[in-house]
Image (cartoon, rainbow over all chains, first blue to last red; front, side, top):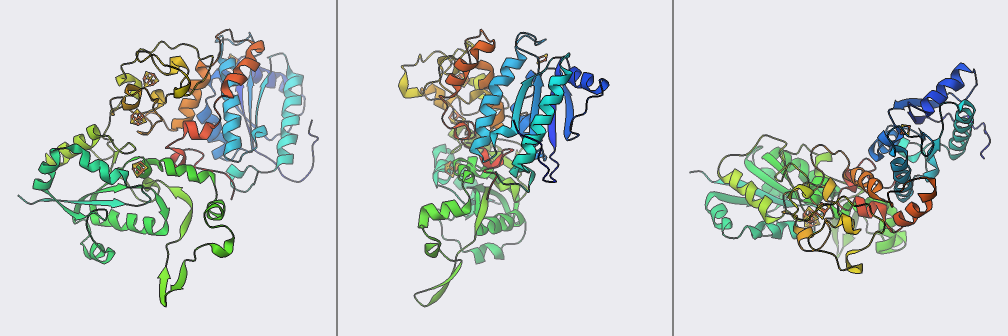
Length: 145
Length: 316
Ligand code: SF4
Ligand code: SF4
Ligand code: SF4
Ligand code: FES
């Protein structure tokens, strides 16, 4: 996985986090005083299934260098299949991003439960490192993929 | 009674929109009786100098087809905005960039290289041809919908606008009953609402092209695995394509409550794909089904890329 590289670039990362799992996981990481990069802008959503393609595109349009979606593990979604819908959207979204010249790795989906503070910390750290290596997004105005 | 002064203009256009105006059958006689065409480059010879000489606001309504691809398109769009009381985006290209908006996936450099080869062969904006100076309008980096350049009062969507919508517009114009600014001369609801096919909301386990199966004419095309843009597209054409056994490709643009037609369709397809068993072990199967769409942007943004959140390729 990408190591943190210090090229001085501080990416903006929008994280759509399901309130039942990943958002709670982030909370747990916080109260457990785990440190993770301050680059993420958390957005609480009611379910990862609530994150539609337009929201992801809008995040990139408004300057995100990376977008992280955190949802409940398979079988755990409070709305039965919201996480699966999002998983399929992410497949198509990554292809759409690639076709318009944005690296698909800038979009990442991860299942993180409420008890997985450590996984939250690791995911955010690794993803931030990856986006730092990729540099600014071409959609944010100054990058080139 | 004073005649209504109509202008028709084509910018980056294929000419289909101009022809579509003639599809209103005998209503054209009514139009001819009540209106004068003061500008119609496709049919009459009007010079830009004549157009510039018109007083501001002196053309009652301008139907503008085609997208903004060159500096000339942009300049004339601004000029027509000044001269016209009402400006109408006529057709998909003017409304949202249209099919030719897909050119935004390529940079100006890539387009010119494909067309003309090495840079030395590219046409120059200023040159001398046969002893005379020739000025060519600059080719913009990106193709733009009309609304990105000037304020648009009405939209008549479609590629080209179908007879029903054009007819509805002329009825309103000739009857002196133009709606409030911002109106779109089409249905409010989506295409599925007027499509007679039975929608079963089946899960899609296989995506096919129309020629690959013998589809059932009574059942929704999406149910049969054919990608039909109906759910994300404004009705008004009478579901012309599904009625002819072809899927809707979205030419009428999105309904009013949709901001990005392609994103909405992408969500719809993502919801319908799969066996319905869901679960981690289905991932591969879902990926395989979705892999059958070999051109995501071209499928979901056939007409609307230039007006979408992406607008085009993100590099230069
Ligand atoms: S909307 Fe369709 S018919 Fe009209 S100019 Fe564009 S491509 Fe041609
Ligand atoms: S998806 Fe297409 S075929 Fe199905 S109901 Fe809608 S318009 Fe008709
Ligand atoms: S069915 Fe769709 S693509 Fe065909 S004319 Fe109607 S809106 Fe356009
Ligand atoms: S409730 Fe957490 S992903 Fe649906």
